[in-house]
Image (cartoon, rainbow, N blue to C red; front, side, top):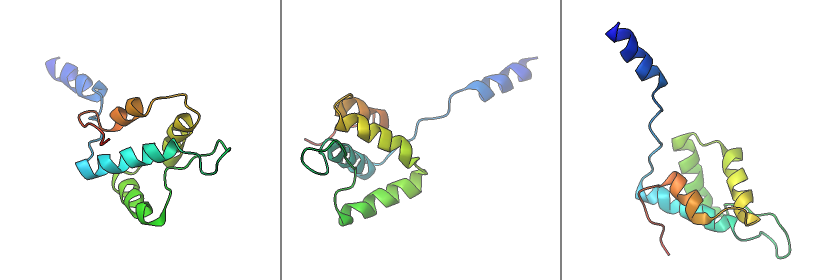
Amino acid sequence: MYRIALILGLLTAPAAAETYSPYECETIGIMLQNCMTPDNPGENTCSHVKNGGFARRVIALVEKHKWDDPKFDAVCAKLCNGSTDIFDEYFKYCPARRPKP
């Protein structure tokens, strides 16, 4: 009986949160900052990659952690239109780290 309860407990326990290195958290912070700036003045479209050199960092992050890009695009859209706060979103990815000013 004890083994069954232990197995059920392990099956229902939440998965460990994804952990990111300081370099990856810096990349995420930059991506979120980029989301707050419209691509063109007067437009409401924002993207998390603004230049080609930074794109390599983003690609490495996406490949390593198997990111769902549309999910992050939704976060980016919320930041772009001001419906969420950058710090709230940042701490969802890197809860133990403070973003660089």
